[in-house]
Length: 317
Image 1 (cartoon, helix red, strand yellow):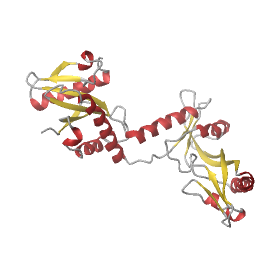
Image 2 (tube, rainbow, N blue to C red; image 1 turned 180 degrees about the horizontal axis):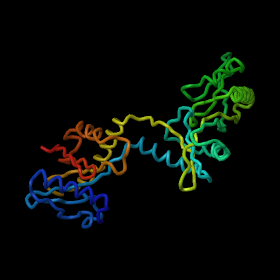
Image 3 (tube, rainbow, N blue to C red; image 1 turned 90 degrees about the horizontal axis):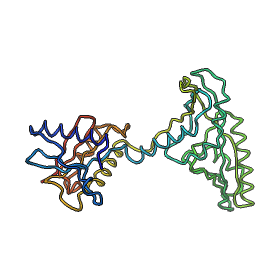
Image 4 (cartoon, rainbow, N blue to C red; image 1 turned 90 degrees about the vertical axis):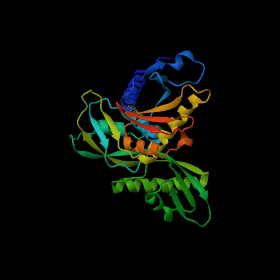
């Protein structure tokens, strides 16, 4: 199979690096995938006429968590596309960590609220966000407690002195609770108390209520279709993401060399900068530096490629 344009750019960068560092002319000698379609094989065999090198190319990403986070944001933006050119961003939302299931977003009414807003660019407005969950009756002992599945649950536990028993508001897949007006807070507490009494009778009960987020209007879209964007953190450290991305790529590359020795030396080119945008290149370099020969066998070399910039790491004997 012929190399992709991205793979060709990576190979060209590695060839240029080898020519410069060895002072000998390197070139592609063979494309093993073309001749071994039914066998795991490296992407290219390189040679300078005296030495040959089997090269497998792997695309670095920002790691599974950052990757899923970005996919979640893109999915969310598609769900919140508006039929007007107006753009809004949630600037004051409860703590929301991605990725997670966004099916509930479609039921919040935030798109309808955004379309109805009449505010100027730069201004903010409080909008209602519909919520729906289940209250479950846990215990009928003397304990009087209402809890939810969030780390911050003061708005829920405040109802404890108004119930008889122990109850759980099941809302693990939804963001933290937020009420910006006293009216919305009081309505929630009344409905939660009612749901607790119903759950004590029936074992569980459905509760619906509205919380409040703040939207700021941004400059209108030039494409004619606006969107509501949510700023959400990701529960991952960039250093950990770099380590994960490097180890996953190398693990996948090593499998290409299980069946045979394709050349005198084997290498993997880790291609950065085209499908990752969060993790800095220096963190990938540090992650590779942490490896040892046992982590790489049977690979001898690792090339970290970013554009035409290449750094090589030797692990062979």
